[in-house]
Image 1 (tube, one colour):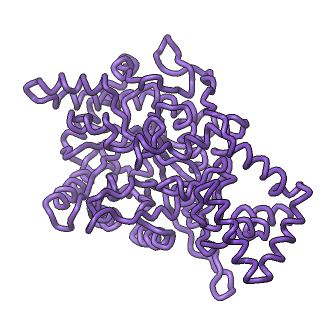
Image 2 (image 1 turned 60 degrees about the horizontal axis):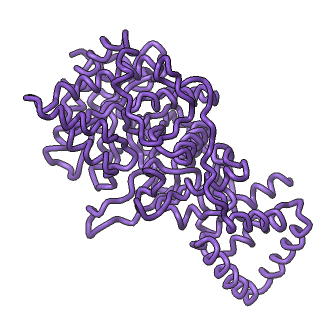
Image 3 (image 1 turned 180 degrees about the horizontal axis):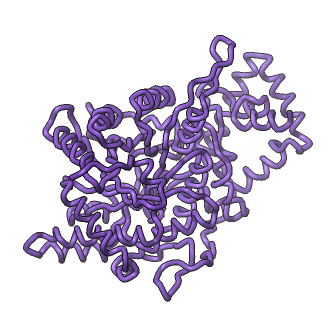
Length: 516
């Protein structure tokens, strides 16, 4: 084996190269057999002429594991560029900033920013408390500022840091069954890209038309970033877990599961079929226009990865021949584009949008109140602003009114009293109290059939509900347009109404800026 002259970043941004990233899972512990095997695999990858980078997972499945950031430093020294998975689940904004400084310090540039799976029950003493202080859109915005040279104030004096050179990427799942889920994914992806994402990696799925749809969507929207196809080497046990929703966001249909069950009866337990399936996925991704492949699987040796790459390159010459083998639609699944019968892929026409949900009296009432009192052009706006100035002049009035406000908001919106309200941005559904991951800019990738990843079968994803409300009023495009900043926790347990009218929360500040 000879080392590859391309770094992951250079390979992914070179139109003449199909980049290959191999996902490695450090696992729990520091000096266990798994960590030693991962480091040995990274060293071999660095000497391979076929692999451009290694992805290092960040507590996958919400399970504690060796820090991806520390593992990356060791791998970087072994001659392979690490793609550090960076989950928002366990880190507040200060920790995120500190870790990014550390990565920049040791020369790690490629970072895949994720919401992260919800914490598992396997933490010390039980389930860890989730953080989710920032979402991937907000982290993209922050990394863009770091790359420009972060500006801030210290002791009243303006400061500017030396610009970093991060190459940030994001994840997206086109493999969603419901219109509301899919449109939320694409809307959030658009915001991630506008905030600074430089590449995207798809979630695990085996429907060729869905991967093609993602590429067409980006082209239609003028969002020109490279996409890596997620190629997971699928065993029957893993497929069975994914089929029942045990790995959030990963989609394996009953049809595919049945095929894998039949294949495991072969003398090699289906090993060669798995390799061939992955090679065909590689060929399809290359043929359709992806910029690379993100290859993963449980305990996959480097020889298997190289075999998939070599075989995939051979098959990519006639990639259209294998489209029928990746026809795994979900029952009544929604596609962004209509089907082109000649190829089995997507045509140029968009599918009609039909998911408008049910009429919501609460939504109708909230919109009416907003128009009457919260719009600056409303005749009551100036009066209410004056009212809140009077309220805040007295501690007794502030406390009394605060109790009334909390009663109203808890009753109507299940409010958690964060003080920096995002109701206006999510169709008057609170993303802080009703989303376990506090996603203020769109859904995470873990929902299935419209259900929340954390409460499957019990609680609908708040962004699915929000999309359906917005569809009724023709405002669904705002999911892709309005970037909601992080919650300002200095406003915790203060009046969100007062914070808005007096220009303290994110919407109030935006209004003040707009009005000069």
